[in-house]
Image 1: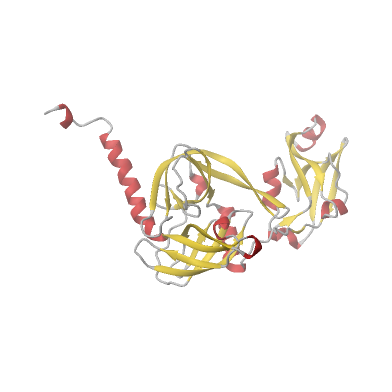
Image 2 (image 1 turned 45 degrees about the vertical axis):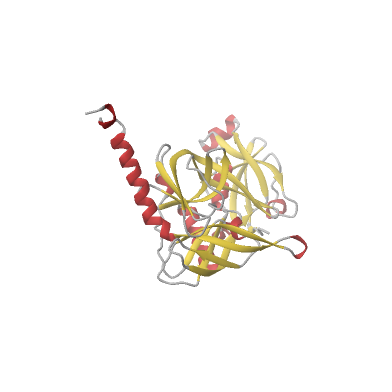
Length: 322
């Protein structure tokens, strides 16, 4: 046996890696479409846009990145088997960079949505897009970071998308809106941006984004509450920490004029400790409570002001995203 014929120590691992990637690609590529859109531009002009989308139901619902279909209400979707479908934008949410589409076709090949909360750093992931329409694009890599926050804005509204997935699976032009899948072939993220050379970001599929997708499918929009404060996490003064048994809170840095917070007496320097008896230790804790259901009644917000606690009752208003 020659040297070239001898098995190498990593052959088995490489074969297993390739088998996972090819299996995921074969399973998901038929579910990923190339999206072609015509977007409005300044002074009445139009520009051609492109991206990818992921079919999630056999009767034509698909998801993509909101920025892929910004400025348009319809377009076409091309699949690797050569057929094309028209689609309409059912709903778009710039503050999560997610959009739901409805394709004309039926009997499509839906992808299975997974759960990004089970991902671990170093885990194999596969990015699948369809930038050219009939070929598909598959890259593989690992989860390089978890727990990142992606700031997004729409009009004057801003929001942090939590638990964004960072991966070194290369994202090619037109891959935005495509699938990020785990080794079982379930979609755990929607590719949204290139974070740097060799790094990509994906919006996770988790409980929060499932609710956003459901709201877009049902209502065409996502309702969010706001009270009108901006702030940041900070250590609590010793007396405050002793009072609530925690070490962190959210300090109010700014109170928006004519907002619910301004009308109910919030002041810069207040430290938010609890909302409806739920501990608040960082901005993400507060943001998670600002959902549509919060519009149904007042919130009781416990703050630390000066050297004592104070309860403020505030009725959230609906956040206008644009």
